Image (cartoon, rainbow over all chains, first blue to last red; front, side, top):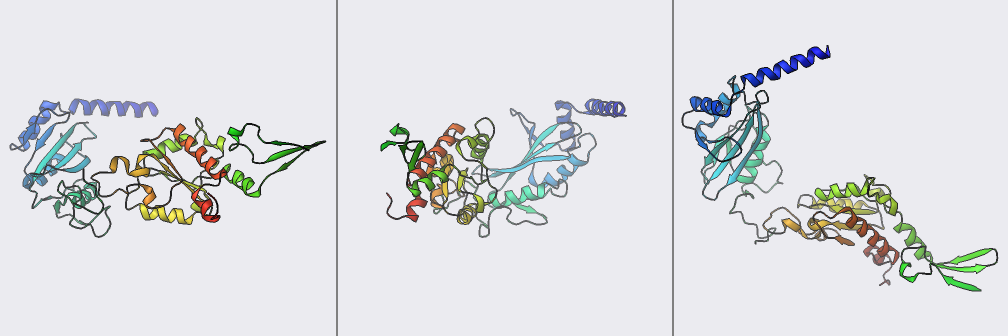
Length: 172
Length: 186
């Protein structure tokens, strides 16, 4: 019984290895899906930029397409570059063991992007965190309110570079 | 009557049992002050509170476990309830949200109680002193501290040294708690 299980597991891993795409193939596959992707070279991960308006439909395809199968959103965060905000999504496939990083530039004054919490449930809390710290408005999010910050922090966004707090913060 | 101070080494007088031995035939009589005996007893049975907010807590756990084993010095059992603890080791960063919790824990501890600020964060905010919106710049803004330890995080030896320093402080009656009880001391 145990032997059988091990064998079937080995076959499964072998199968997924045979089916899994090389980096070049993965890149081509993503470009076929979405020709306007801009890849960024030089990082450890495969980085790409996408227009925030196209993000939701792209994310759905990443999750649903059989040979991509990005079933695991393992990091969702935001970066304040002073001129703009960048949303960063780290995605992984537990079946094929490939990872990608999708980034999306947002306008600082009117930062908004579609929520992906209906594709990856974990995004619900992560997006709430980004919302309270950076002030990104996640459209169609089911419960967009403060996550960790206590009451009274609405609209203050402490992780933005221009955040000021003369009471608690000693500037260097 | 033959009177000798105990122990003979005056430098160690803070570490041993307080008092003098009066030699008599068939044994001896020990004289001491009750305050000193109480302080000696208290200093050798310090029960720490299970409290750690970041990486210093890992060093604290290491100090408690077999390799460093703070039980050797009388910090026997870490208590999960502040009502049973004598000493709180602030092992880690205190954020604004944690400050009221820390204050409440301190208030719930029975007298006499002692506080050790472990590491840079608990002492001054440490690496979070500048440009942070959420960190308390030193736990002594919230509760009074008896012993501070430098380091980020301090090694277990440093924590042991702080605990032994606290013992000496208690034996000499110099902790804040003891001064509060007996206004005339120091």
